[in-house]
Image (cartoon, rainbow, N blue to C red):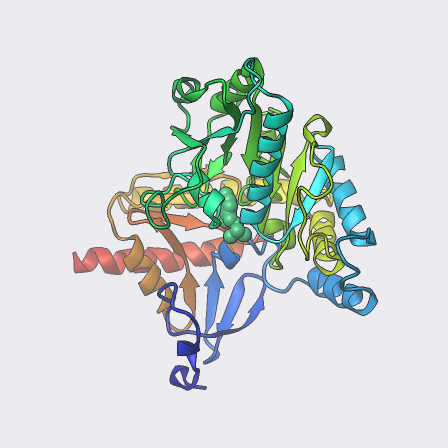
Length: 402
Ligand SMILES: *Cc1c(COP(=O)(O)O)cnc(C)c1O
């Protein structure tokens, strides 16, 4: 089929998409409408943690679809209970609320914090509601999560914002301390800023933040929508620094490609009352069955060692590439990594890599001088070598053009 035969104008215009329609995916590979294959280092934006269409997800979806798809969120169902129990067993949290997207999980964390701030008022007896977030952070696209985000320009697009969010600077504990007042109820951060350009919060910063929040009686929320579910070399990225937050949100990887997200909290913070929070699809068995399949895969002996090993390998290869082409190095945790290009050629690389023949390469450039890599967690050495080879060819061509 030719691209022009698709009625793509029927879709509301929200972004510039290349003239490709993807029809198949398997592991690290995608196939478009013309049968051309692409090595996929986006994986649905760090979503497909086991690659495209892994057997365990196909099995979970088909067997659950035959059994029970939706009894209503007003009732318990087996996959929902099993997944909640699995997530609490493998984290420092006691309670789980399921939702459908990362933004929705973060909304839930914001609501829970505000509720907790009403139940734990300041010395004047006033409810506490202010949440400290960070410059360059990304927490989602609902009005509250956009207001929480530190993306440039986002304070204006749909003004007025939801009030109560104040922005500190990542890895600068004094900037957080300055913003704390008697209305502050929580600090929310990504352990590694993903959309912001793969910027890790340092171990020291995480530790200092936990101490500071405890000292002031405020909650620490980690948005692990991108960093969670094995992406950073531990099941959850907060484990890298050894701190135990009060609330964590998960999205992306937890569904391995299907819409599933979660908010987890310690039982001391679990203060919602009936009517406070809910949602039609929350905890539906079809999606939570997939979540169970993903979690079972991640906790298999040796799986996380594999993620760490491939993360180190990718890091080393990116560093070699950086040295070879006079770039500015690389950074990241586990298999969430970025190559610092040292020049604003990110968009050009993305386009040339995609157009390579006979097979293309899908990359992401969150900033003009940066490439972000989000492969499947079971990516192989060969698939890393192949990507590095293709990327080197593209950079060579750009450099040759001057
Ligand atoms: C992607 C992302 C979100 C938003 O998730 P959606 O599923 O798109 O709503 C929130 N926080 C972080 C850190 C993310 O990377």
